Length: 109
Image 1: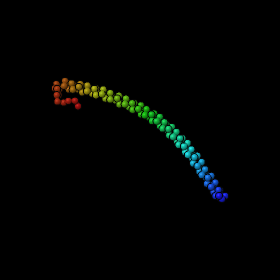
Image 2: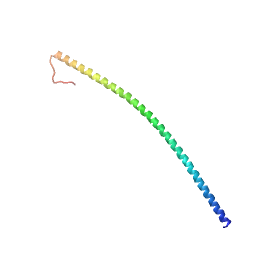
Image 3: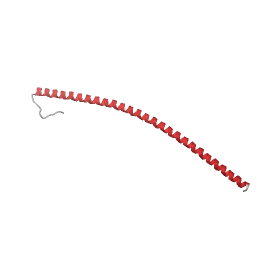
Image 4: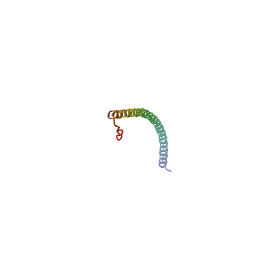
């Protein structure tokens, strides 16, 4: 073999070694980057879950507060309904006492 051929083969083997070494390092770097990205995603996911739980709790608290107000309003309306019915009955009785007649056709309302 000639010296030029040996030099060319030597350069080729050296370049092949450098390329394989470079690819190995690149794969290792990519693996590290992939693991870091996964860890960051897990951390962000955990943060988001915690924030969602907090928001859900706040929404439930607000909902329960408003539900309590609605129930209170419903009770007030029911009490008012009873008072109005009682007043209507008194007015009906007063009308009967004044006119001396009983209106059997007219109903509530």
